[in-house]
Length: 467
Ligand code: F0G
Image (cartoon, rainbow, N blue to C red):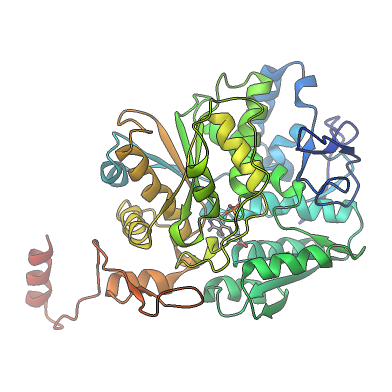
């Protein structure tokens, strides 16, 4: 649905700019310029909405919260509700599928599993296409309309593709997606086909697709909607606003997210920093990012850094050693060359969080535990609970601290994985740069279907045994 917005003087586009995040460059560009990295130095760009110029943040907070009961589409959307901090003016034809408004659940079994008194899970899998990507995609596709693009493209491990396909279809633009052939779950691929995207399957991995996308973006009719695009990050930062509103503006001690291409962690970091600049929160939660062991270039870099003091302008390494052959069953985060690593690393260092990795076994068991809480998620999302367990054991998170993990995708995004885990057949095959023997995952919380005689007594006996 695209909507012409009402005549509310909430314009930020006139003031907003795009800026290179590297302190040694800091070049500034217009908000309508179709650029994805700094044309001067190649550094990452971010949108600057001049948050510090907003005078009355208390009034802003009341306005946001009053929109929760409004029937206006822009108010119903959990992203456009925060439009004062988004770089559009009132005439923008904004695109929405009523994204956001995702729940925060208490997860008592997962908490005990991690060694915590309590744990909350914010489930971004409850978005319209089943993943967190929707909060950024509604903004990126709106910007595609602003700059007059005809085609919106992305490289994807599946979720960005499904989200782009849906939002581009709503906006009347052509969706085109580049996927690593044979490495996308059937459910995600099915979504993209159903929303009418041109699906291009590439012999290569996600990182190869990403390189191609950056070349395609040079064409004037094509708009790139990967998280390298700073407008995607603007949408995704609103998750921090919604989270704080749901927490009655009480900052949790820790927020933990999975890490793949590193857009999500960059966006949450930016969101919390803007809330602090506005005075709506008085400190940042420690932001930690969890990668899968076989696709963990940033966790390896983080482990090699000298212990750093929390600082507003942390010094960032020049380069990241990429993982040439990423391997993990959490296909959503099977990424060896994350494009937003500098932004994510900056956000983590500014907040005092950590970047670590977890094994396939740890991901699989944590995922099953999230299921036992009646919540469920896709494998990549479960890196959070696996990572929290490790961070508690390491003393970085204390038992009584408040922790929110962000689940990024719905459990039905990868039913083959779930089924294989519970039937005891889950295994990570060899592949380039891997041992020939597959890695077998012995699920600690297996729950395979039982073959039972069709009689009441047999079923009651089975229930008794399983009690
Ligand atoms: N969780 C899920 C379910 C994802 O789909 C992704 C990324 C991530 C976590 C990692 O987030 O990239 O912002 O660090 N999926 C992308 C895609 C790469 O193409 O769908 P990130």
